[in-house]
Every structure is written in C-alpha cells, then in structure tokens.
Image 1 (cartoon, rainbow, N blue to C red):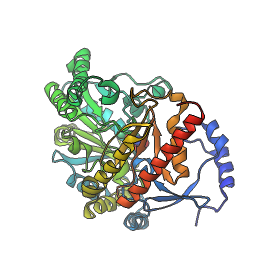
Image 2 (image 1 turned 60 degrees about the vertical axis):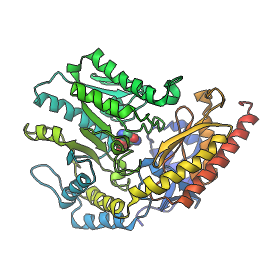
Image 3 (image 1 turned 180 degrees about the vertical axis):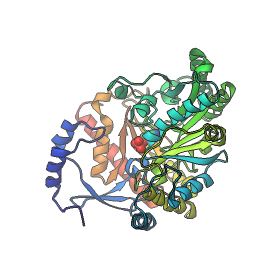
Image 4 (image 1 turned 90 degrees about the horizontal axis):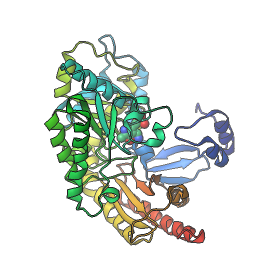
Length: 460
Ligand code: PMP
C-alpha cells in the first residue's frame, strides 16, 4: 500500500498543517478535526477508526454505482497499464475516449450525438459559456452574449461556474458574476407560490424567464442555463408546467436551452437524464459526477446537432484542456455506463427504489419538525420547519439542519444539511430497499433527537 498507515489523530494533525479544504471554514474544521474516510464498499463507507456508516449522499451526489465495483477498478487498472495518458489535440484520440462518446450518445436523447470532454462540472459549464457565445458569433449574431440562470442554481466554482450559480454568498467573494450573466427566481413552489396551485405557479415561474429576456432584449440573450432539479439549492422540484413552458419561451426567442445534468444525469431522477423526466429537449447538457460514478474526475458537454453542426463548420474552437478525454477517466466511464445500462440500474431507480424511498419518506410528514418532503428518483429533500402550521423556518444561523446531520451520523447514515433547513438524501443508485429503510429509520430517529435537543435549548 502506497499510502501510510496512521491513527486518526495523526491524520488530523497533518491535515490541519497542510490541507486547505473546499467550501470549508478552516478554523471550524481545525477545532473539530477532520473525519478521515478510508474505505468504501457498496453503499457503506468506513472511517479511520473503523466506524461504518451508510453513505446516503453517494459522496457528493456522484457514486451512482456504489463503492468498490470491480468493473470500474479493472478498467482503470487496465488503461493505466496500456496507456496512462495521451491527449486529444493534434488530430489524436484514444479508444476509450471514442468509445465513451459513442456510449453516452447511445443513452442520450436523439438530438445528442456528440460529446465535448472536460474534467468536472465546473469546467463543463465554463465550456458552455464559451461554446454558446462562439455559436452565436458563427451564426452572425455576436451580440447574443447573455446567459440567464437562476437564483440558488449551482453550476460550479470556477469563475464561469460561480457566475452562473445563483449563490450570493459565493458572488460576494471575488466580484462575481462576470458581465453577461443574469439571474431569475427559482421555481420554488413552497417558498414563492403561496395561494397558487402548483400548475399556475409553474407557469408564473417560467414567465420570469420571458420577463428577463424582454428586459435584456431578446437579440442579446444567448442561452438559459438551469438544472432539471436544483440540487445544491435544496432539491427543488419544479411544477409539471414549468419545463414545458420554459421550452416554449426558449423556442419562441430562439434561445439555446442548456440543461445542467451534473447531478441529474446518469440515472438519478429515474431516467438517464433529468430533461427526460421533466419533458424538455435541451440544446446542450453539462455532465460530470455520475459519468464515472465519481471514481475518477470527468465531465463534459453533450452538444446537440443544432449547435454541433454550426461549430464543426466554424473552423477551430479555441478551447480545450490537457485532460479533455483522459484515457483512464474515459475507460472508467465506459465501464460505468455499461454497468448502469446492463444491470438496468436506472430502471430500478424509476420503478423500485425511487418509489420505495418516496413511500417511506411520506411517513415523516407526521413528524413535528417536518412540513413536507419532495424529490424524484433517488434525490429527496426533507423540509424542517419551526412551525408546521405556518411553515415558518428557524433562523438560518441556528443551523438546525446541522444538528440533525450530526445526529444522523451518530445513527449511522450520512445525509446532507442544505440552506433553509433542508435535509437531503441522494444515495448510490445501487442501494436496495432494505438499505433505504435503514436510511429512513436513522433519519427519523435523528429528527426525534433533534426535536428533543431543540426543546432542551428552548428553541421550540
Ligand atoms: N453543476 C451542478 C448541477 C452541480 O451540482 C455541480 C457540483 N455539485 C457542478 C455543476 C460543479 O461540478 P464540479 O464540482 O465537478 O465542478
């Protein structure tokens, strides 16, 4: 084994001295000490003290086929031995990157036959910004530069990704967004749809796009970028009327529709792509995470015929990464997509495990802290509230969801606490109904303990 054997406290000391973590308050981390995870098998992860917990978040919504799948491990090993690296510049390619492009196209809606590789979701979305602006230049409309995205959308952490994201607390660090990005409200029925039916609210929320297009001037708008379901924004399920109306508006003004499928892609919503679950036909799709089940970094953009036909006739698109189409990442991607396809894992999410989780989560609706649950496939949110009758939330700085998350960890499951007191469950897609029962039982116990704790603190 190349990595040394150390105790948890030894790892914590080295981590504190040398490792600046992503999206982390370092002082808070150091006060607590890092949790060291060192093994994974199926839906289970094990820390350096040997404690096993069920990973109800699939890492960061990415380990779709679960940990320790031999086919993915062997694919990486074989490819590393055969050819660890070669680039896709200078008219070159490796078999794994060609085969993966062909495979992804085979599981994509019919307008998508071509893939542009990147290494992450953020890079994929930076590619989107350059690609859509280049497309409109080639079409003779170079003034179409503005990309419209949504509040609380998450599209990554690079300068482009952060700019597209609708998180004000990210924008305030580093003078973002960049020029040419606009945002509209999210289709959050429970927060913004008071007094309306879900269907009427869906049309209203889509209408905010049309209002923004008219405010900017349709001739300046290049694209609308959105996740099928806002993930990091809290698993916000749009009403059924929302996406068809968004499609109609984009078509009306000729605007490119971009579906950020970084979380939803590769099965999470019960279809290969979130746009299939919600019934729209995007022009571009960003993917990452589930394409390799997170075993190795890979991301990219699915480019529809509408866009690819123009780009391919436009000379060189001066964009690319050293690791675009990395041989090892693509070999793992091939093994992963074949596993999802051949073991019918996506169908299982749609017909079996997704409905089971939905049914079990409904049991939480009686809980004094829960106002509702919402989700699709294997991505679900539990809304914690202070007052069930009015739906009033706790102050965000009380971090009630973090209290629940810590109880959950003690009770043997990882679930995520997200803005506005939402608890998120998004396990590996290979999870069984029995394992889902463990997740829900532990979550229920953790909500009970949170409730007792809040009463003890006088917050209820
Ligand atoms: N888009 C979406 C919808 C995401 O959820 C994420 C990551 N959570 C990203 C983009 C960014 O991906 P990455 O972290 O791989 O850069």
